[in-house]
Image (cartoon, rainbow, N blue to C red; front, side):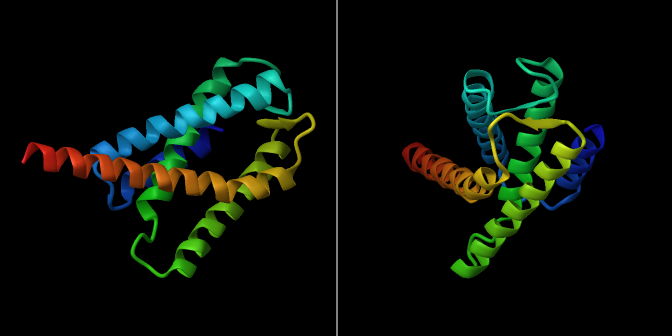
Length: 152
C-alpha cells in the first residue's frame, strides 16, 4: 500500500504539469468527495466491498485519499484533450484496464475485499468514472474562464 502511494505520488511530481494549480486543487477535492461518497454507500451502507477491515477504518481513509488524488491528477494531467476521439477513448480504456488490474492486485493483497461486488461491475463503471473526472475538469475550466472574463 505504501509503495503504491509513493510510486503514484513520485510519478505525478516528476511528470510535466499541464494542469493549473486551481484545476489540480478542485479536481482533487472533487475526486476525493465523489470517491468517498460512493464508498460510503457501497461499503458502509450496502456492504458490497471495502478496504482493509469491515466498517470505517482510518488507514483505509488515508489510503483512499492518496490514491484518489494521485490517480485523478495522473489521469487528467496526461489526458489527450486535443487529440482525435479514438485516442481519447483509448486513453480512458487504458486507465480503466489499469484500474481493473490494480483492483485485482488489491484484492489479492487483501487491501480490498468484496461482499457482493464483482470485478465486472468495476469494469463497467471505470470508464464512466474517468469521464466524470474529465467532465468536472472541463466544468472547472469553464468556470475559471467565466470568472476571468468578469474580472477583465
